Amino acid sequence: MPLPSQMHDDIPATPVIPEIKPVGLGLPESVVARINQILPKPMDPIEQSKKFAAYKAVDNHVKPEDRVIGIGSGSTVPYVVDRIVQQGEEVNKGRVFIPTGFQSKQLIVEAGLTLGDVDQYPTIDVTLDGADEVDHALNCVKGGGACHLREKVLAEAAKTFILVADHRKNVEYLGTNFAPGVPIEVVPFAYAKVLQNLHHILGSPKATLRMAIKKAGPVVSDNGNFIIDAPFSREYMLDPYVIMAQIKMLTGVVEVGLFCKMAKAAYFGNPDGSVTIRDLEGHTETIKAEET
Image 1 (cartoon, helix red, strand yellow):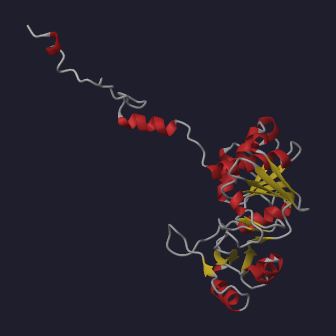
Image 2 (spheres, one colour):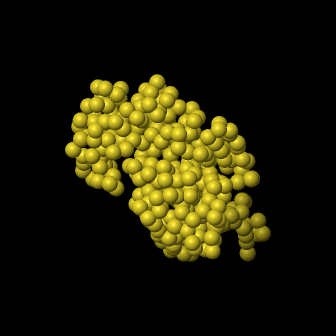
Image 3 (cartoon, one colour):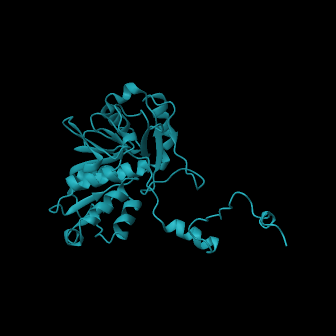
């Protein structure tokens, strides 16, 4: 018979702790992966800032009495539509929503809102849109998504034009962060001539025809036109209205992605969850995260 000291030689001195596997123990890997997809994930800080800015802009400027509403283009616009839907079916029942392009049209339709067009409603109560950059005077660059012709029509048609963006678009002078330059929509047969004008007359030697990413050839706008991206030096952006007018006068140019003296206010989402609001009079207000 073994001695007591010999009875437990096969038991390690340190207890073995069984491995604890993550949630999904015993489930197939494919099921676990699907569960992880469904579980809510923390929103990217930039996206969170866009959402806060869009929500605050809608809360302040889309009132129950507004019946015709312009919906712009860009990454902030889904949050604009989301907040409008949250205002309720009763409020939205009698409203008409005018899109600036394919993206906003799809958002309107998918949200179950009533779709309209600017030829039916040439006067719009309020238009909310994104921007590629906004300067200290609320001038902005738009057209990174090649929708700036329709965006400008809806901006001009609106009694109130509001910009919504994240903090990266908030600059002192245009051209600070948006490297491609000023988007210019041109009729296809005139693009080479317009490029020459920009290179040798208007001071943008690096102006280029925008090429498509997933198709051969240039980007084609919703209107069947080409897009030129024309970067300008700081001196031109001190008063962007001047260079906008000069570009617009070139034969073959359909529209310029400089929106000058049009916006009533701009809403910028900040990384900490706060929202900075700047109006046309130069007033700036920052609303804390808990108030958004």
